[in-house]
Length: 359
Image 1 (tube, rainbow, N blue to C red):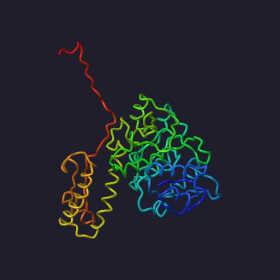
Image 2: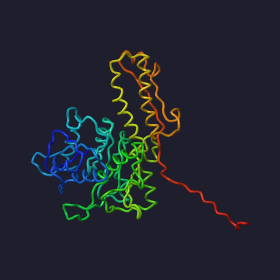
Image 3: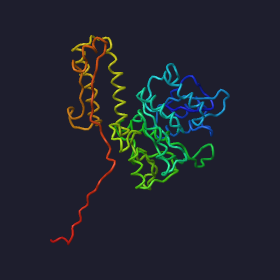
Image 4: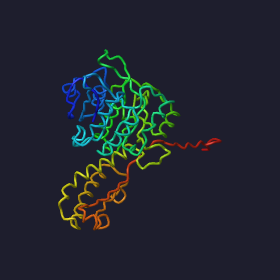
Protein backbone atom coordinates (compact mmCIF):
# COMPACT_ATOMS: atom_id res chain seq x y z
CA UNK A 1 0.00 0.00 0.00
CA UNK A 2 1.22 3.50 -0.91
CA UNK A 3 0.14 6.63 0.95
CA UNK A 4 0.70 10.24 -0.10
CA UNK A 5 -0.64 13.33 -1.81
CA UNK A 6 -2.15 13.21 -5.31
CA UNK A 7 -3.86 15.93 -7.37
CA UNK A 8 -7.23 14.17 -7.25
CA UNK A 9 -8.98 11.04 -6.04
CA UNK A 10 -10.88 9.88 -2.96
CA UNK A 11 -9.52 10.52 0.54
CA UNK A 12 -12.05 8.42 2.44
CA UNK A 13 -11.08 5.06 0.96
CA UNK A 14 -8.22 3.28 -0.80
CA UNK A 15 -8.38 2.28 -4.45
CA UNK A 16 -6.98 -1.08 -5.51
CA UNK A 17 -4.82 -0.72 -8.65
CA UNK A 18 -3.29 -3.24 -11.02
CA UNK A 19 -1.30 -0.85 -13.24
CA UNK A 20 0.04 2.68 -13.37
CA UNK A 21 -2.74 3.48 -15.85
CA UNK A 22 -5.18 2.75 -13.02
CA UNK A 23 -3.31 5.27 -10.89
CA UNK A 24 -3.50 7.90 -13.62
CA UNK A 25 -7.25 7.40 -13.94
CA UNK A 26 -7.88 7.38 -10.20
CA UNK A 27 -5.40 9.94 -8.91
CA UNK A 28 -4.38 12.17 -11.81
CA UNK A 29 -0.94 10.80 -12.68
CA UNK A 30 2.44 12.27 -11.86
CA UNK A 31 2.78 15.62 -10.10
CA UNK A 32 6.15 17.36 -9.55
CA UNK A 33 5.15 18.28 -6.01
CA UNK A 34 4.63 14.74 -4.73
CA UNK A 35 6.63 11.51 -4.62
CA UNK A 36 3.50 9.34 -4.55
CA UNK A 37 2.85 9.02 -8.29
CA UNK A 38 6.50 8.44 -9.08
CA UNK A 39 6.84 5.75 -6.42
CA UNK A 40 3.73 3.94 -7.65
CA UNK A 41 5.16 4.05 -11.17
CA UNK A 42 8.51 2.68 -9.96
CA UNK A 43 6.61 -0.10 -8.19
CA UNK A 44 4.95 -1.27 -11.40
CA UNK A 45 8.12 -0.78 -13.45
CA UNK A 46 9.94 -3.15 -11.10
CA UNK A 47 7.47 -6.02 -11.06
CA UNK A 48 4.61 -4.91 -8.85
CA UNK A 49 1.16 -6.00 -9.99
CA UNK A 50 -1.34 -5.15 -7.26
CA UNK A 51 -1.41 -2.19 -4.87
CA UNK A 52 -3.71 -0.08 -2.76
CA UNK A 53 -3.26 3.70 -2.80
CA UNK A 54 -4.50 6.09 -0.13
CA UNK A 55 -4.60 9.81 -0.87
CA UNK A 56 -3.95 12.45 1.78
CA UNK A 57 -5.06 15.96 0.81
CA UNK A 58 -5.10 19.32 2.58
CA UNK A 59 -8.45 21.08 3.05
CA UNK A 60 -7.36 23.95 0.79
CA UNK A 61 -6.20 21.59 -1.98
CA UNK A 62 -2.53 22.58 -1.61
CA UNK A 63 0.23 20.05 -2.13
CA UNK A 64 1.16 18.37 1.14
CA UNK A 65 3.69 15.72 2.05
CA UNK A 66 5.56 13.92 4.85
CA UNK A 67 7.41 17.10 5.85
CA UNK A 68 4.07 18.67 6.81
CA UNK A 69 2.95 17.97 10.43
CA UNK A 70 -0.71 17.96 9.32
CA UNK A 71 0.10 15.25 6.75
CA UNK A 72 1.69 13.10 9.45
CA UNK A 73 -1.27 13.55 11.79
CA UNK A 74 -3.68 12.49 9.06
CA UNK A 75 -1.43 9.56 8.16
CA UNK A 76 -1.57 8.15 11.68
CA UNK A 77 -5.36 8.57 11.84
CA UNK A 78 -5.88 6.50 8.67
CA UNK A 79 -5.20 3.34 10.70
CA UNK A 80 -7.58 4.12 13.56
CA UNK A 81 -10.67 1.93 13.87
CA UNK A 82 -12.93 2.76 10.94
CA UNK A 83 -10.20 4.72 9.14
CA UNK A 84 -9.50 4.27 5.44
CA UNK A 85 -6.48 2.02 6.04
CA UNK A 86 -8.26 0.06 8.75
CA UNK A 87 -10.98 -0.90 6.24
CA UNK A 88 -8.54 -2.54 3.80
CA UNK A 89 -8.84 -6.30 4.18
CA UNK A 90 -5.24 -7.23 3.40
CA UNK A 91 -1.96 -5.57 2.45
CA UNK A 92 1.56 -6.81 3.18
CA UNK A 93 3.84 -3.92 2.18
CA UNK A 94 3.50 -0.34 3.41
CA UNK A 95 5.21 2.69 1.79
CA UNK A 96 4.96 6.41 2.57
CA UNK A 97 7.38 7.85 -0.02
CA UNK A 98 9.76 10.40 1.47
CA UNK A 99 8.73 9.85 5.10
CA UNK A 100 11.79 10.31 7.34
CA UNK A 101 10.32 11.73 10.57
CA UNK A 102 11.36 9.26 13.26
CA UNK A 103 8.27 9.60 15.45
CA UNK A 104 5.96 8.98 12.50
CA UNK A 105 8.08 6.08 11.24
CA UNK A 106 7.74 4.54 14.69
CA UNK A 107 3.94 4.89 14.46
CA UNK A 108 3.96 3.27 11.02
CA UNK A 109 6.11 0.42 12.31
CA UNK A 110 3.50 -0.26 14.98
CA UNK A 111 0.69 -0.06 12.43
CA UNK A 112 2.57 -2.49 10.19
CA UNK A 113 2.94 -4.94 13.07
CA UNK A 114 -0.77 -4.69 13.88
CA UNK A 115 -1.64 -5.54 10.26
CA UNK A 116 1.09 -8.18 9.79
CA UNK A 117 2.59 -5.97 7.07
CA UNK A 118 6.12 -4.74 6.39
CA UNK A 119 7.18 -1.08 6.22
CA UNK A 120 9.79 0.11 3.70
CA UNK A 121 11.58 3.16 5.13
CA UNK A 122 13.34 5.76 2.96
CA UNK A 123 16.52 7.51 3.97
CA UNK A 124 16.64 11.29 3.64
CA UNK A 125 17.56 12.64 0.21
CA UNK A 126 20.52 14.45 1.82
CA UNK A 127 21.95 11.39 3.57
CA UNK A 128 25.55 10.42 2.87
CA UNK A 129 27.63 7.49 4.06
CA UNK A 130 28.86 9.72 6.88
CA UNK A 131 25.39 10.82 8.03
CA UNK A 132 23.05 7.94 7.27
CA UNK A 133 23.69 6.04 10.50
CA UNK A 134 22.40 9.06 12.40
CA UNK A 135 19.17 8.84 10.41
CA UNK A 136 18.36 5.56 12.19
CA UNK A 137 17.80 7.41 15.47
CA UNK A 138 14.29 6.79 16.76
CA UNK A 139 13.58 4.11 14.13
CA UNK A 140 14.92 1.00 15.86
CA UNK A 141 12.39 0.62 18.66
CA UNK A 142 10.10 -2.21 19.71
CA UNK A 143 8.50 -2.71 16.27
CA UNK A 144 11.62 -2.26 14.16
CA UNK A 145 11.51 -5.90 13.02
CA UNK A 146 8.54 -5.08 10.79
CA UNK A 147 10.49 -2.57 8.71
CA UNK A 148 13.66 -2.11 6.66
CA UNK A 149 15.70 1.00 5.80
CA UNK A 150 17.16 1.71 2.33
CA UNK A 151 19.98 4.06 1.28
CA UNK A 152 20.60 6.07 -0.93
CA UNK A 153 18.08 7.74 -3.26
CA UNK A 154 17.82 6.66 -6.90
CA UNK A 155 18.51 8.70 -10.02
CA UNK A 156 15.96 8.14 -12.78
CA UNK A 157 14.39 10.04 -15.65
CA UNK A 158 11.46 12.33 -14.95
CA UNK A 159 8.92 12.17 -17.79
CA UNK A 160 7.53 15.55 -16.70
CA UNK A 161 10.95 17.10 -17.41
CA UNK A 162 11.84 15.50 -20.76
CA UNK A 163 13.34 12.53 -18.88
CA UNK A 164 15.96 14.70 -17.17
CA UNK A 165 17.56 12.79 -14.30
CA UNK A 166 16.16 13.43 -10.85
CA UNK A 167 16.62 11.82 -7.44
CA UNK A 168 13.73 9.71 -6.12
CA UNK A 169 13.08 7.92 -2.82
CA UNK A 170 13.95 4.22 -3.03
CA UNK A 171 10.75 2.77 -1.57
CA UNK A 172 8.83 2.45 -4.86
CA UNK A 173 11.68 0.60 -6.55
CA UNK A 174 12.20 -1.62 -3.49
CA UNK A 175 8.49 -2.45 -3.12
CA UNK A 176 8.36 -3.51 -6.77
CA UNK A 177 11.37 -5.79 -6.27
CA UNK A 178 9.73 -7.26 -3.16
CA UNK A 179 6.67 -8.11 -5.26
CA UNK A 180 8.78 -9.41 -8.14
CA UNK A 181 10.82 -11.67 -5.86
CA UNK A 182 7.72 -12.94 -4.06
CA UNK A 183 6.15 -13.94 -7.38
CA UNK A 184 9.21 -15.52 -8.95
CA UNK A 185 11.05 -17.09 -6.00
CA UNK A 186 8.80 -16.86 -2.95
CA UNK A 187 8.48 -14.55 0.05
CA UNK A 188 11.18 -16.63 1.78
CA UNK A 189 13.81 -15.37 -0.71
CA UNK A 190 15.92 -12.30 0.01
CA UNK A 191 14.85 -9.38 -2.24
CA UNK A 192 18.48 -8.48 -2.85
CA UNK A 193 21.48 -9.35 -4.99
CA UNK A 194 22.17 -9.24 -8.71
CA UNK A 195 18.64 -10.42 -9.52
CA UNK A 196 17.25 -7.44 -7.59
CA UNK A 197 18.07 -4.90 -10.27
CA UNK A 198 16.29 -1.53 -10.26
CA UNK A 199 14.40 -1.17 -13.54
CA UNK A 200 14.28 2.41 -14.79
CA UNK A 201 17.18 3.57 -12.60
CA UNK A 202 20.09 5.40 -14.19
CA UNK A 203 22.23 5.56 -11.07
CA UNK A 204 22.33 6.41 -7.38
CA UNK A 205 22.93 9.63 -5.51
CA UNK A 206 25.72 8.11 -3.38
CA UNK A 207 28.34 5.51 -4.24
CA UNK A 208 29.19 3.01 -1.49
CA UNK A 209 32.61 1.33 -1.35
CA UNK A 210 33.17 -2.27 -0.26
CA UNK A 211 34.49 -1.19 3.13
CA UNK A 212 31.59 1.20 3.66
CA UNK A 213 29.18 -1.50 2.52
CA UNK A 214 30.31 -3.88 5.25
CA UNK A 215 30.02 -1.19 7.93
CA UNK A 216 26.54 -0.08 6.86
CA UNK A 217 25.38 -3.69 6.60
CA UNK A 218 26.43 -4.35 10.21
CA UNK A 219 24.18 -1.44 11.24
CA UNK A 220 21.13 -2.79 9.32
CA UNK A 221 21.25 -0.16 6.57
CA UNK A 222 20.31 -1.81 3.28
CA UNK A 223 22.41 -0.37 0.50
CA UNK A 224 21.55 0.25 -3.11
CA UNK A 225 24.76 -0.23 -5.09
CA UNK A 226 25.67 0.02 -8.73
CA UNK A 227 27.89 -2.53 -10.48
CA UNK A 228 29.25 -2.28 -14.00
CA UNK A 229 27.85 -5.64 -15.08
CA UNK A 230 24.44 -5.30 -13.42
CA UNK A 231 23.61 -1.63 -12.85
CA UNK A 232 21.88 -0.50 -9.64
CA UNK A 233 20.73 -3.35 -7.37
CA UNK A 234 19.50 -3.83 -3.81
CA UNK A 235 22.51 -5.03 -1.82
CA UNK A 236 21.13 -5.71 1.65
CA UNK A 237 18.25 -7.56 3.28
CA UNK A 238 18.15 -6.68 6.96
CA UNK A 239 15.29 -5.39 9.06
CA UNK A 240 15.73 -2.32 11.23
CA UNK A 241 16.12 -4.80 14.10
CA UNK A 242 18.97 -6.51 12.28
CA UNK A 243 22.15 -4.80 13.37
CA UNK A 244 24.99 -7.10 14.43
CA UNK A 245 24.86 -5.63 17.93
CA UNK A 246 21.27 -6.81 18.49
CA UNK A 247 21.51 -10.43 17.43
CA UNK A 248 17.77 -10.48 16.69
CA UNK A 249 15.95 -13.56 15.44
CA UNK A 250 14.28 -11.12 13.01
CA UNK A 251 17.56 -9.97 11.52
CA UNK A 252 16.60 -10.63 7.90
CA UNK A 253 13.79 -9.16 5.81
CA UNK A 254 12.81 -12.47 4.23
CA UNK A 255 12.70 -14.32 7.56
CA UNK A 256 10.42 -11.72 9.11
CA UNK A 257 8.19 -11.49 6.05
CA UNK A 258 7.97 -15.29 5.89
CA UNK A 259 6.76 -15.36 9.49
CA UNK A 260 4.19 -12.65 8.74
CA UNK A 261 3.04 -14.59 5.67
CA UNK A 262 2.64 -17.78 7.69
CA UNK A 263 0.77 -16.04 10.49
CA UNK A 264 -1.66 -14.31 8.13
CA UNK A 265 -2.20 -17.41 6.00
CA UNK A 266 -2.79 -19.72 8.97
CA UNK A 267 -5.10 -17.30 10.76
CA UNK A 268 -7.24 -17.01 7.64
CA UNK A 269 -7.00 -20.69 6.83
CA UNK A 270 -8.18 -21.86 10.25
CA UNK A 271 -11.22 -19.59 10.66
CA UNK A 272 -13.47 -22.61 10.07
CA UNK A 273 -12.50 -23.91 13.54
CA UNK A 274 -14.13 -21.05 15.45
CA UNK A 275 -17.39 -22.81 16.24
CA UNK A 276 -16.19 -26.42 16.34
CA UNK A 277 -16.02 -28.37 19.62
CA UNK A 278 -12.65 -27.54 21.20
CA UNK A 279 -11.34 -31.04 21.86
CA UNK A 280 -9.03 -33.72 20.51
CA UNK A 281 -10.79 -34.32 17.13
CA UNK A 282 -10.54 -30.59 16.31
CA UNK A 283 -6.89 -30.48 17.34
CA UNK A 284 -6.13 -33.43 15.08
CA UNK A 285 -7.87 -31.75 12.13
CA UNK A 286 -5.92 -28.54 12.72
CA UNK A 287 -2.62 -30.43 12.92
CA UNK A 288 -3.46 -32.20 9.68
CA UNK A 289 -4.52 -29.06 7.79
CA UNK A 290 -1.70 -26.83 9.00
CA UNK A 291 0.80 -29.63 8.48
CA UNK A 292 -0.33 -30.05 4.87
CA UNK A 293 0.12 -26.32 4.28
CA UNK A 294 3.61 -26.35 5.78
CA UNK A 295 4.57 -29.45 3.78
CA UNK A 296 3.49 -27.72 0.59
CA UNK A 297 5.84 -24.85 1.40
CA UNK A 298 8.63 -27.32 2.17
CA UNK A 299 8.30 -28.85 -1.29
CA UNK A 300 8.66 -25.35 -2.77
CA UNK A 301 11.95 -24.83 -0.93
CA UNK A 302 10.65 -22.40 1.67
CA UNK A 303 12.47 -23.94 4.65
CA UNK A 304 15.89 -25.15 5.59
CA UNK A 305 15.95 -28.92 5.96
CA UNK A 306 15.24 -31.89 3.73
CA UNK A 307 12.49 -33.54 5.78
CA UNK A 308 9.42 -32.23 7.60
CA UNK A 309 11.03 -33.02 10.96
CA UNK A 310 14.03 -30.87 10.06
CA UNK A 311 12.01 -28.06 8.48
CA UNK A 312 8.96 -27.37 10.67
CA UNK A 313 6.70 -28.52 13.47
CA UNK A 314 2.98 -28.15 14.21
CA UNK A 315 1.66 -28.70 17.74
CA UNK A 316 -2.01 -28.54 18.69
CA UNK A 317 -3.11 -30.69 21.62
CA UNK A 318 -3.83 -30.63 25.33
CA UNK A 319 -0.41 -29.15 26.00
CA UNK A 320 -0.92 -26.08 23.81
CA UNK A 321 -4.61 -25.64 24.67
CA UNK A 322 -5.25 -25.86 28.41
CA UNK A 323 -8.59 -26.26 30.16
CA UNK A 324 -8.51 -22.53 30.89
CA UNK A 325 -8.12 -21.88 27.15
CA UNK A 326 -11.04 -24.18 26.39
CA UNK A 327 -13.19 -22.39 28.96
CA UNK A 328 -12.36 -19.10 27.23
CA UNK A 329 -13.06 -20.43 23.72
CA UNK A 330 -9.40 -20.44 22.62
CA UNK A 331 -7.52 -23.06 20.64
CA UNK A 332 -3.74 -22.60 20.34
CA UNK A 333 -1.66 -23.88 17.43
CA UNK A 334 2.10 -23.71 17.83
CA UNK A 335 4.02 -23.59 14.55
CA UNK A 336 7.77 -23.37 14.07
CA UNK A 337 9.93 -23.31 10.97
CA UNK A 338 13.60 -23.41 10.03
CA UNK A 339 14.14 -20.26 7.93
CA UNK A 340 16.42 -19.85 4.98
CA UNK A 341 19.10 -17.27 5.69
CA UNK A 342 21.27 -15.49 3.13
CA UNK A 343 24.96 -16.01 2.54
CA UNK A 344 25.78 -12.37 3.23
CA UNK A 345 29.50 -13.01 2.98
CA UNK A 346 31.28 -15.59 0.87
CA UNK A 347 34.60 -16.48 2.49
CA UNK A 348 37.30 -17.99 0.30
CA UNK A 349 40.25 -19.87 1.73
CA UNK A 350 43.05 -19.96 -0.83
CA UNK A 351 46.06 -22.19 -0.34
CA UNK A 352 49.16 -21.50 -2.36
CA UNK A 353 51.64 -24.31 -3.03
CA UNK A 354 55.14 -23.07 -2.30
CA UNK A 355 58.41 -24.41 -3.67
CA UNK A 356 57.09 -25.72 -6.94
CA UNK A 357 55.32 -28.96 -7.81
CA UNK A 358 57.22 -32.14 -8.67
CA UNK A 359 56.01 -34.43 -11.42
